[in-house]
Figure 1 (cartoon, helix red, strand yellow):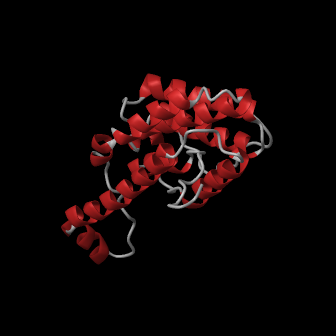
Figure 2: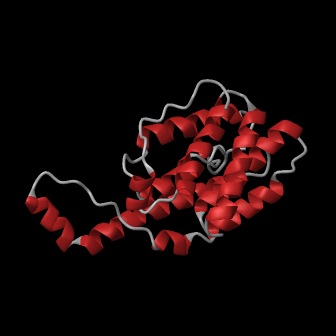
Length: 206
């Protein structure tokens, strides 16, 4: 592991993972993807490559082929490879990563909306009564995250000039916005926010 240890406030037992519907592979992927971003942010591209390679291994062994976490793992691995050898060998990985994200619709459609803790019985009853509407709103948010990731990957044809900068931004966003609970939204956020590719260029930018 490069640099200082990653600061992770949450620790869960295997029992807690299983109760939340998570596996050890889910948590291992998240931790290693965070490690990828941390190493890249510090300019340790070799360390980042090793971490990214491990996320690919975990995703291929434990996740569905349409799981967006596989797409992010492939893209991050390709970015790190390109930064090390400079030969553009990541293009095949970028293409595969984009294909995974583009095919992730059914995976996202099966996601469970997070259940929010409320301060009153009234709010709890309202949430239960309008669960379908509540979930539909989350589906919009989830699709927006997926579209952002796809745009970044579609724009990715060469290693960014400042991989450390985009990785640092990804890591900061993840640590700032990640849900406190183990849920499906956290899985998707990890895939979207720990993608260390730069933001997609806007129209007119070169």
